[in-house]
Image 1 (spheres, rainbow, N blue to C red):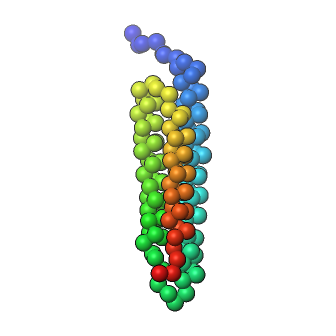
Image 2 (image 1 turned 120 degrees about the horizontal axis):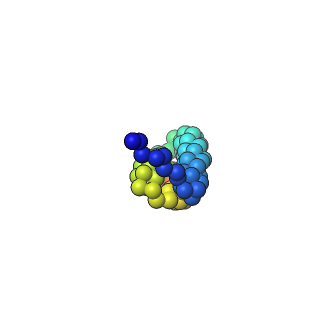
Image 3 (image 1 turned 90 degrees about the vertical axis):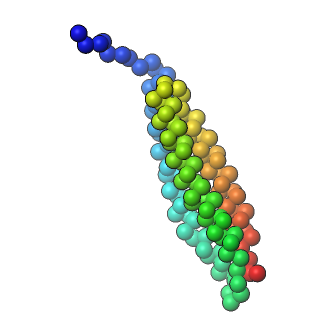
Length: 117
């Protein structure tokens, strides 16, 4: 005799839909920031024939690109674990997005220091 189908509570359905929608928006944001970071090399245009402090440019790339992707993947994995364990997970893309904004601000701070040495 097969087991009767189980019904998900309404909060789980809403949480799952919200989590997926927020992760899609978060992914588009991360991809947009990755595209935006391609143009950061133009910060070195003012150096001319002088040497620039390229270490700060590299740090900005690491913070935004690598750090942002790592934060996204970690948040996504933790969200999947929470959904499987039947816990609310909608807050993870929100926290990940806030961390991403912090990483962007730190990268911008590093980028502003790229000047002729």
